[in-house]
Amino acid sequence: MRSYYQTQNRKTPSLLKRLILITALTSIFSSLFEIFIHEVFRIVGPQTLLSLNPLLVAKGLIYQPLSYLFVYGQIGEQITFSWLIGLLILLYFLWVVGGDLIERVGAKQFLLFYLGSGVFSGTMVCLSAYIFGLSGTIAGPGASILAILVLWSMFNTDSKLFVFYVFSVKVKWLVAITIGLFLLTTLNAYDILYFISYVSGVLFAWVYGLFVWQLQSPFKIFNPLEKVLIKMSGKITSFFKRKESKIIDIRTGEEINDDDRFMDEMLEKITKKGKASLTFFERLRMQRISKRKNRTK
Image (tube, rainbow, N blue to C red; front, side, top):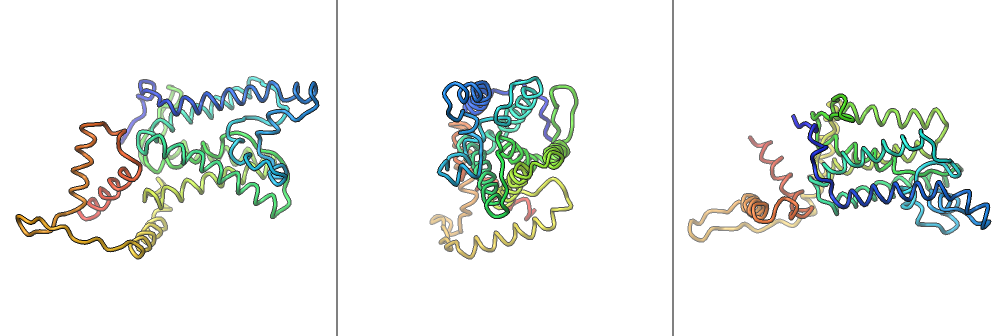
């Protein structure tokens, strides 16, 4: 069982520092100057421009399915104690979970996943608004935070986290409770667009973890279905993948196991340059080889 009691001693990746800093500063700036800019200059403020409004996206502000991740709060909402606490909780999850995922998949792939889950959720919000005639505005990295929490729980099915250095809780229950609170809050406030964005973020992460990393959720009730889906994806991949030629050792005449050779090369690379030198696809192949060997034992 892996423990996260040591998160306070871990060096925060530079990418994570930038994401946290940009989100915090953009949120504070847009909240402080939204009303001021609107009243003084008679133009729309930064919160309006950066938040996700399906109507404005349809009018040409096509960047909003990405930009809404970097602002927090409702348009015109003032910075209060509860506002700060809400933002800090999101950034805390980003720091703890993001640091671990970056160690596993690398900074570039983490960034693509983080932004990709947000853009996917934003796109689903816009499509739902168009199809069902919904209106409203959403802002904040909530969908992406839920996405990285889900993927994190799939990597750490039995791990524990020391929350705010006060008490420990299993990762899977922390994630389940967090998702439940997010969804219940939106339903209680009748924020359908937020609900859609959160559900989309969760589904994006689950599908990504299932098909890209061949991971299963920490809840055994879903494992039979997940095993079937993983098996189906493997068959589809094998169907389209060209059959590789065998590699023969000319000294012995025996076939060389290409997976073993690859693992040896990767271990040598880690020894010389460190784990961070591995690319996303090298990490992915190493994990799949390890899973395949574990199944054959």
